[in-house]
Length: 271
Image (tube, helix red, strand yellow):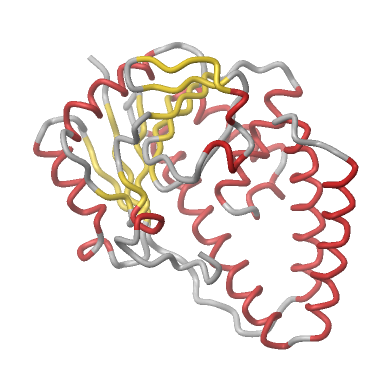
């Protein structure tokens, strides 16, 4: 019988967040053998580190370029647009204090959130569980959650590293990943290459957690990315090294993405 660990990622607001209902239901239904909360984070630094922002944006652009190749969306027009956007970002950093402050706060919070996800993976590997479900505080309940969750989790018993998106997110066509779908069956969409949507709620098995922690050890700068882009960076690495990953997205989503559904407000100022 599979053993499931549930991790709640939050910043002290869990008691009043949609994810609390999800936690309560999954525990009551006996679908998880343990729950951990990861919420500690350092205080925000007021003084803007403009150099860090510039270096991050350059690395981010490099990843975005590689990602467009990964999903077969590369093109000279997109690369030119990306270069223009990078120069515009640098110009706004130099010219607008308000923009610098906003970007610096966003950058810090992104790093805090990513660090919490990584801590949950490490605690998972320190446990005896086979599967980790990670919930951000805006993950919201759906009808028949217990039944559908039990069904989709059965797909994580495969021995190869497996990623399962549970809360959907943006439209797959808008993300440019529609053409990478290899099949839809039994509430699961399978992709030919590993792709993310959002990290509101997902499940991973032990082999994937081990490989991601190994990746972070070899590429610590990736731990400074937002959590979605940390996944993307690892997926790019794994694909380039021919490391197999089973990429599954629950369809329809097992959970709702509260921020996208208007149930909650996102911490991110641009969402």
